[in-house]
Each structure stands twice: as C-alpha cells, then as structure tokens.
Image 1 (cartoon, one colour):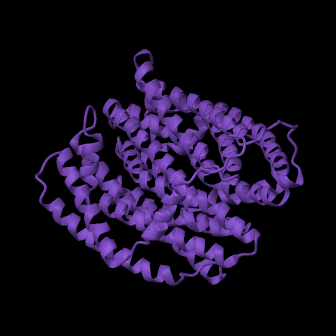
Image 2 (spheres, helix red, strand yellow):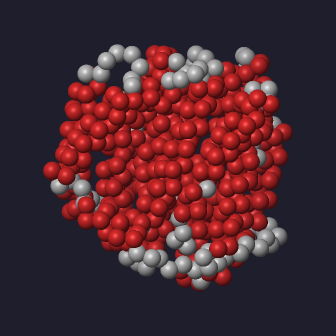
Image 3 (tube, helix red, strand yellow):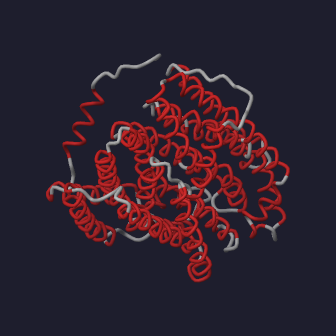
Length: 516
C-alpha cells in the first residue's frame, strides 16, 4: 500500500507543481479581474466531475468491484466487467454532455447566480463552460481506465495523466492567447484537448498492462446496476469536499468582484498537499483494504488504516501549520507579479489560512471513506456528506457578509472537520477501526512536534520586514518550519523511519511486469 501511495504521491506532486506554473501564468495575465472570475466559474463544472469521478465516487464503487473480480476470477473476467462499464459510461456521458451544452445558461444561473446581473461576465462564463464541458466526457472515461490500472496494482500512468491537463493549459495559453478574443478562450480549449490526451495515454498503458477493451453494446446488466447503485451515493460521500468548494464558488459570485478568483488561488495552494498526500493515500488504501477484507483479514485492514492515518497526519500537519502562519508570504512568492497585486495576495492569503485550518481533516476524509467503500457501504458516507454539505451552506450564509472571501473557506474547513469526526466515530462503533498501540504512541508526539513548529514559525514570521516577501525570506520560513517540525519529531520518536526506509528499499528492487 505504501509503495502505491508513494508512486501516486510523486506523480501527483509533479502535476501540482506544474499546475502552480499554470496558475502563476494565469495570475500574471488575468489577475483577479472579470475574465479570471468567468474562467474559474467555467472551470468549476468539469473540474467538479474530474474530482468526483477521478478521486471519489467512481473509484469508490468500481475499484472494489473489479479488484474482487480480478483476484477471484482472473484478468479475463475483469476485462469483461471493464468493457461493460466502459460501454455504459460512454452512452451515459455522451447524453450528459449534449444536455449540458444545450442547457448551459440555465446551469450557470445556479452555479453563478451573482453573475446574472453582469451580462458580459455571464455570457463569457457560458461560452467558456461550453468549450470545456466535453472535458468531463473524456476525464470520466479516464477515471474508469485509472480504476482498472489501480486494481491491477499499476498506479504510475493513472497518477501521471493529470500532468497533461497542465501541459496543454500552459501550451494553449502561451501559443493561442494572442489569437483569441481573450486568454480565457485559449485556456478553455487547452482544458478540453487535455482530456483527449489523458484518455489516450491511459488506453496505451492499459494495453501495455495486458488488457484490451472491446466495446460491447451498452446494457444495464445486473453487475452494472449494482455498480451504479454503489456509485450514486458515493458522489456525495466521497466528493463532499468538492461539493463544499463548489458551494464556496456559488457564494463567491455573490461577494465583491474578484472573490471567485481569490478563493480559486487559495484553494489551489491548499490542494497541493491535499492532493499529494490525502488523495495518494486514499487511492492506494482502497484496493489494499478491499484485498484484506476479501481474504477475511480484518486485523490487517485495521492496521493499514492506522498506518495511513499516521502518515497522512505526519505530512499534512506541517503543511497546514505552514500555510496558516505564512499564508501571505506564500501568496507573495507564488503570485505577486503582473496583474496580481500585493493587496490581492493579502486577501487571498486570508482565505488560504482558513482553508489550511481544515487541511488535516480534508485528508482524513480521503482515508476514512475507503473504510466504508471497501465493505460495500457507500450509503453511510453519503448521509454524512449530505449533512456536511448542509452545514457548509449554513456556515457560508452566516460568514459571507462579515468575513467576505474568508467565510466560504472557513465554512469548508469546519464542515469537513464535522464530516471526518462522524466518519471515524462510526468506524470505531462498528469495530472497523481503532487506534492500535503504535498509533496511540505516535499521534500525540506528532501533534507535539507540530506545536513546536508553529511556535518557531510564528517567531520567524514576526521578524520579517514589511512589504512583499522576498524569495530569500520565504526560504528562511520554509527551512525554519521544516527543521523545527522534523527535528522535534525525530527527537521525540514521533516518526516511523523504518517504514520509510523499507519503502525506499522496495523501490530500488526491480519489479516484475506483465506485458510491459
């Protein structure tokens, strides 16, 4: 499991770093103006589908099913199941895409109600969303192929595919912005073309893994009905964080101009550690727990969840502390250039600090939900997710006027904490999780190391000169935070270094492959 998480994490890190390069270009060219607001609202709809299907509901239902078939009946049976799912998904996604293109103005009245009073911004958002909407067709099929590869223990290609999203976005922005009515058009076309490229990459990877997909006539066979019944509640249960962020964007359109852009930039920074750590751990954990349960090895399933919790807490806690304490310096260094001002960095930094407050619990939700999905239970996370979304909406309405762009971010963090607490309480009550002896010893020590880091980082930030944070000053903060956290953690014995050394040794050994 740890090896798979490491592979996913490395590729996800590469994708997120390249994504920052893209966002830095967008910030420099568009800033927080009306074109930026329209583009980010337009991107929200296909991006929501990408995150829900690629990292949530589809994986939650599909991976346990195909993993079980693969281990019990072999690769031919798994290929047949994947072919049935592909045929049905193509039929369904094609219909959704056509309907979305036709009814896009009405959809955006729901997603961006604050734009309705600005005809130019609303019309631009409609056009950009129509350009990007076919991306959901390709990315959802990509998620299906990713699930097949993950079930086969092949994580690299599926984790690397999102790199193409950033590569094509950057390339189209640089190459075609001068020929388009505004840079938002070039960006939108880059998104759609990247979906085609991602699907092509994974089809090649699947063939090299020894499986070929033929397309039968789409039929709702009993297996497909079971798959979609399990997937439907997972859309809410696994994707509650993304639904919460979508609510944030809806509320953002009702706030002062530029709020949508501020929330986008803050969320992008927050998503780096969440994607690298939380998504990677959750992606690798689901097939691992499913395998243990299929073998009736409940203690190993509980142990896997404990090790994932330790690893995720160890890595997300310093990220959360760093982003909260040094939110403004982070925004200064990443985005203050071109059309993005120091004032915008301060406002975006405030939202980032509120998002970062919930970073550890965002990641915990990612690793707690597989504890339900692996046992075929998608209803419980769905019910908890609905409650969390309702809480998020209520907190948004409460915070939106006094806190402005900080309100949606804080509401998301608090509702995610509620979600994580309820999930862990139910797992404990059902006997599917308990802190084992190593976790009971390490978790308090990890929290203590985090406290040491917070104090050291606040002292270093207090001594920085006013104005824009220089790269040298930012590096000083990074070194101070990293040295204090990991130094304290090593001194306290909070980290299981043997586990990471064993992972490194396994990665140096050659791995046998099937079909390349």
